Image 1 (spheres, rainbow, N blue to C red):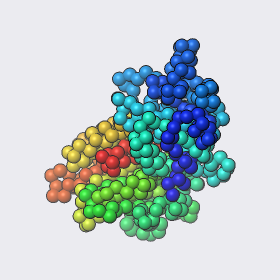
Image 2: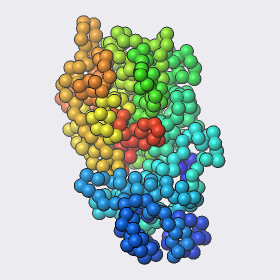
Image 3: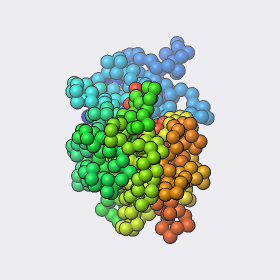
Image 4: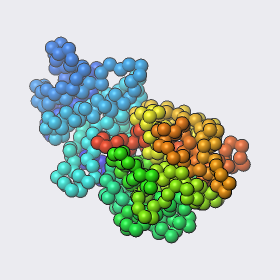
Length: 516
């Protein structure tokens, strides 16, 4: 199952850099990304070219090695400043693979570097190479001969034990990112909610490890997930667009020490609803499901790693924010699953609506089942404000219990190591004030009628809404039952068309909660 979710069939550790070994195993290209860590057989060649070309360590090049009788691609990491990070290694590996493809390589070898400054440089380099090899799901299905850009890729590192560990982790991480890219990158029809359900049930997961269930009945949604049902309402009349709530669950065989619960925004296409996205800003909204895609990818990593002592639940809130005669509109008053009266202020703030009831249900499970050391998450491409604030990074916002545990700082630290940077934003009283009921008869205001990019604290306040609408605001540090909750806004880091989805932030989450 892992190979199905990898961009090439074989990730092979090399045991030798001998010319005959490379020839016998059909390796035709050597990719180097650190000019200071060149295999001995290539040192003379590199020295000669460096003496001849002052730009040799600055630009990607391709040349023949007479000693190995094969092509060499050099995509230098280059000089690193105080403000560079480990992503330079991922970028260099991707450039090397891209140049190798253009040169006609069929089975390349990547020379994996080490770095005293970046402990995960080797792993990040492998992941950068594999990311470049990803072929979109619809291209794989429509043009099978383009399913893989390489069938086999080799990796060389002077420390064989270290290389084995790197490749084991890379396989697990890349299978997760592969699933996240498939779901996140599918177009509005290929990854409409029912087809996400089909994908999940198509053998992506080992059913002995990941247990799944789906809610598809709209009547059930109206009763148990009323905020989600409001968003889904306009799509109900089109069977292929009808919403799905997909639940994935893993429980270790060993006694549970901590519980992770991730709820992902899966808006398969966001028209804005009645508050329609006009003026050409609707293009690219098929990526508004990348939060749910990340949850699906994280569950694949969990399946691969089978962490001990961890109970993990993922919820994919798959819905299309369609516009039509039955779409929900501003001014509607809807009572959430938690019994909170919510007045709709903007139908283009559908993501928080899609996730809130599932988040409330997970809070209920935590309390009813007394799940050990629970931590709830929402993951979403939620706000344009997040992109304005931090660019292509992710943002973490912790509630009181999560912040007191040091979660945001740990996530930021681990994300820095693996090349998925996080910025930390704090929730303030102003965020809760913004969403407090404004008139008699309402408890919570869903949103104002401006885009988040024109709203002060536009990426922080949605987290406050989700706490208020689910009752999580009653489980702070001073309550009898504190519950950790973190909201992750990945609007900037998920990847926009024409770039492929990144799978963020599942690597940072895995390092923080599964490996460390």
